[in-house]
Amino acid sequence: MKVEQIYTGCIAHAAYYLENNGEAAIFDPLREVQPYMDKAKKDNAKIKYVFETHFHADFVSGHLDLMKNAGAEIVFGPTAKPAYKATIAEDGQIFKVGNYSVKVIHTPGHTMESTTYLLIDENGKEHGIISGDTLFIGDVGRPDLAQHVIADLTEEKLAGHLYDSLRNKIMPLSDDLIVYPNHGAGSACGKNMSKETTDTLGNQKKVNYALNPKLTKEQFIKEILTGLVPPPGYFPQNVLMNIKGYESIDNVMQKGSRALSVVEFEAAANETQALIIDTRKPQDFNKGFIPNSVNIGIDGSFATWVGTLIPSVKQEILIVADEGREAEVITRLARVGYDNALGYLKGGFNAWVAANKDIDQIHSVSAEELAEISKKEPINIIDARKASEYSSEHVVDAMNAPLDFINDSMTKIDKDKKYYVHCASGYRSMVFISILKARGYNNLIDVTGGFNALKASNLFKVTDYVCPSTLL
Image (cartoon, rainbow, N blue to C red; front, side, top):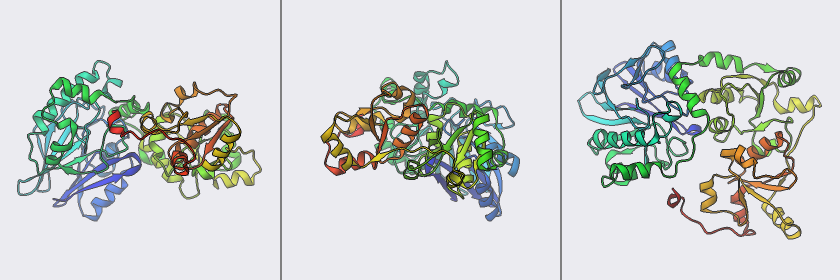
């Protein structure tokens, strides 16, 4: 059976391409749809359907642009109520893609419209399930997201629906089916996802804690809700965009691709409420940057961190990027609904320096240098990693102030004191310091290489390692 997983690591997202006999279908597409259209063109196939497993929270789907540009029919599962033309399928309904069949299995729980699609080949053999956020590899979808959009859908109610869906709809299916989930490790849509992106259903029945047949519904609900942290603030905003509709990616790209001279860029920064995002590597940013700009490196989990740290998807944004990567930045912003990029600095940060404009810097020290400093004076260390990372292992006496909850973490910091900030390797600590520096915190120093470097130096006492899985 010709089904291809198209995985995008920066947001841990999997879309799927199904093609047979000149017809194709896309499942849970990303915002930028041209690659799917190119793939179908190469196969001399028409994209007949766009199947959505649910209204996504962590990205803006490309279904509307595929309908507009490829003439595809949008399909949602039962109970979905989009504000645009779409087919709302019935439980058990079958759609034909060439000689393949796609069977709708309504699996509410992650959301009420959540649907799994059973893939059946031309000979009638069941091949696999595209499970969306109902079933992941090693986990299942968190049931607390829909309540941020619809208040009376409590997480307990949704967890109960998820239990029923898994027991009555998924677990009775054949063990040899391949599970094709919507996300992998790193996504905030689950809490314990595997790095593997496919598996057999039979193996998941053995190893996935949520498919343990001995769990009662009450035990399942408790297990599934334990260890959840609040979702990023952009999640409900993306859900509403996916329900109500959104601006075409072509328009977003055109608007964001304005090359601004230094004079134009500075004027835009002064005359609007735009946030300046510098997407260069942390080790380049700290040597010099435009005052009040925030470093969120494009080579990390860029889109996820933008969504976590910038409260509103309507925020106007000005971009500083390495030359040649501007379109990539705009695209990755649009994936999570940040459509209001006003343009980018033509020539990048070097153009700003060449124009003799003011710059700011962030001081960094190595683990060895910090050890020498600690011999001469007391030091304050901030660990900007997640609470679960800190709990599993950390430098003794370091204070945990997670980047994920930067506004809460700020309250722990005294502007008049000096702090040495680290994360795991250096990406998040630079984001952390740049945000606080823009808010007037000028006594934060980056630790190069982060916790990995501090531990490897053997110069700092580290707590004993505790397996993170025991902390869930």
